[in-house]
Image 1 (cartoon, chains in turn brown, green):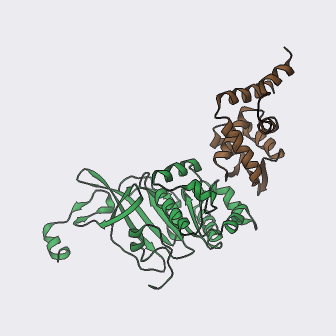
Image 2: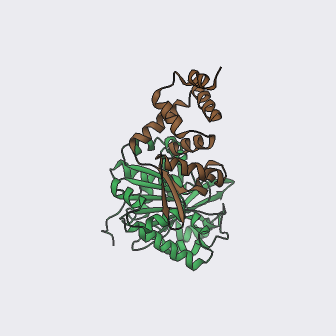
Image 3: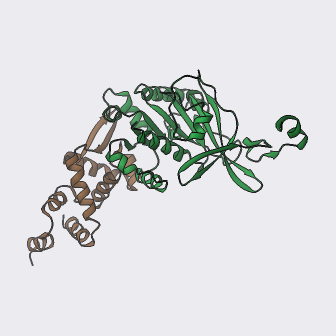
Length: 121
Length: 257
């Protein structure tokens, strides 16, 4: 079976909104961690080093992913003195989409699809 | 002095010790060892204020907001609902970032305070500032500027500070002298051992611009939060952590009347 066919089969019954969120923002386990972190702690405002510490990851790993999420419009990246500070975008629509995604990951089958998507990416 | 407007702490017994409550736009330090209830006292203050329609912010440098939601729920305080109603926000950040943010006009925290109409803030904990400056003088200047930036927003603050020793006196960090001078009120929470039982004691050591109760009172943390009880009686050396009974002759002469 060709890769495209398998992909189509795995995600064919996924909610289009969730599919769009998944393909736009979630291409690594670290991003998945960060998304969950910002959902649970929505008023976090900190540097990549501190966010990495909160998330139990290395600063190098987290920095690139935070920048990605900021460039994709989910986070805001702000220069502050000699620091770069990240926070969740204060857009209710984004928060609602994030909540929907995190809630969907409570489902084992959905998590399998997310993992499949990330491994394939 | 007696007629000044007061900001209730939400804890009647503590209000009584503070002659009615904190003074508005002041920085109020609550110091204690782990488990004495510093954060609980701060959360109760924020919760009771929010219920009265006075929004508040919790600025945490240590605990995840989730921890506050969970701890608050154990007292029956629904912090998530208060957040939905825009009467509470829990910001997780670090001293260096919030300091830089407050120094900028139109910073995130300033905007949030304005948007919510926040009147109260819990900073949990101020101990984390120790890592920002090695020099105590520089640290004191930094804290002075930081607290003034928040008071400028018309906030009444509770600052928690960890005490490293469980009982009695001990060696504190360099933040010790600075923050005790800078804070308008200094409330100490202590463990005290009496007859092989650990009890909790609360004392107001300082309240700038106001009279205050100078007795050492018992308090407990129950299902509703912190409840301040009666003063300890017939004991001396309470702040050492291991008080002794006053002698009977002393009690007869000076205490029992």
